[in-house]
Image (tube, rainbow, N blue to C red; front, top):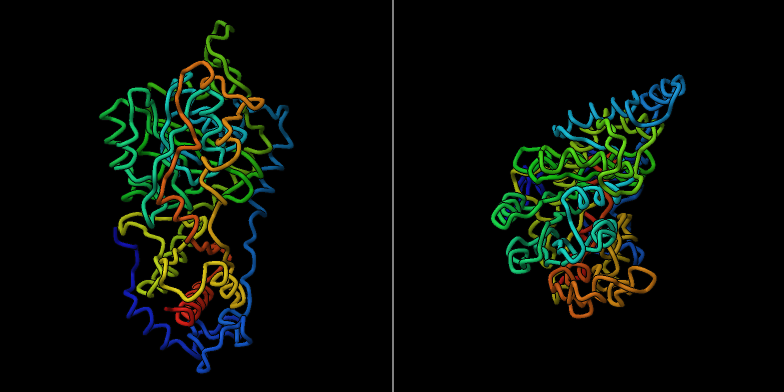
Length: 443
């Protein structure tokens, strides 16, 4: 696994050093390394990052134009709505899939995908334990069983070898979560899915604009799910998209997002059962405008995240975010790990020192792997009960589940915010801050 980068660490440091005094960011020297006295900002020394970048302007005239067009419509319903039609058209430009259903959230997209894949009570779906709970809500509502597999040490994505170990005769699907916009090893996961007759569902909620070996994320698996929630690369406040090229699953997506109603059919009868996950035209108007910004956002985040990795590569005790050289990660965030025993401080102290230097850093990602949460350990999904376990359809005991690498990632990870409002000089300053703190605490 080779971290992506255009510069070696030696060349990066040389370039940063040569830029001192020439490249400034609001009065700060870009890529500046520790002051001669070596004092951390937390101990009274000068900050490595002296000012925060401006927040990106997320909407404006493109969104206003679509909303004004929407206000002239007779209906705001999604079916054959002009805003929904434009959203689907622009989505296909970014992710060329034939069957596309807009919906109310990324969680809804995943539930639609699981339902369209025919997941039934007692079926098992393998996925990541380090993800938003929305990844598995649809699995549980279909009365199926989430099975958690361990992760790659620095990719933070599913380890295909551990996925293979957890496949049983009851396994019906794999949900590959592209955490933080870093593509999973999709060829390996797709090979497992094909070998065992499983559906491969891509959770692309954090991965808008990402590419796997040059291909748009979402186009390798059988079904792709995207989120338009407010914190994502592109947004309409809340919303989602689920799409597929598969004849087995694609025609089902609309029905499972629209109460089981087939709007292309003529009988008017309900032949399947589903909930209402429809997106409205106002949401689609904003989302369609947002997609005109996607490539710029994705490319900028990819460059900034890769630049941060280059700037901290090779530091003793630091393990950067690992991205394959032929992939594009779009960095919903960047995360590096502290190697146990390599620092004369714990992670909490390291993060406090980074924050004092002006770095937007936090400890870890989520508090625990999903299986460590009370609702899983108590199997209390439905009014404190879990019918499939009570009926003997599964023997799953989440109190006994362990994914050692996932747990270690959450215990040792340091998350750094990345967004398109930042520039390269700022990121060089962030990298300099990490170098400064790591140098101070290096054992």
